[in-house]
Image (cartoon, rainbow, N blue to C red):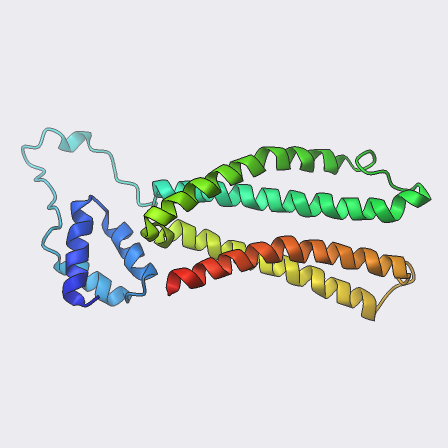
Length: 226
């Protein structure tokens, strides 16, 4: 896209009532430099002029325009989807690790799954509520992305995708580091082979869930940039 194409894009975007900020964010997401965008917006001859304040009966009724940028409709939907994804993934990891703890502890009678751990009931409830929301929003937005590929450039989606990748990466790395550390420097209570196996399974759970989320959105971003 050359400068003439940039000007043409801005005119078409304004014809669709997109704000300067929305246009700017889309162009930034596509790789355009901020200076080129600002210059093109400043030179655009379709900027709507402000109405005259004199003899304008509506002038006194106009409320101040908020400076805070609102989410787009798609950005709001992506926010709901990613929040539901985070809650569902956290619940799955918690419940799976709790189940592993139960397998290794119930023989001694020290731990009974779900009875002494009140958090498990809450996590099950959280999963039952948030996962259907995530599944619905994911399928809905995926269908929209197939018909409208530009939706993937929504600023809110890009920010949430990058945040999700970062958090899932940190979770997977954190569990891996802790597992390796527990082997290299075991204390008196964690030196048994059963403890090593238990920690390995806990780490595997975190890697499968968090790592799977990371890889999915990593690949999605790479495909979108091609």
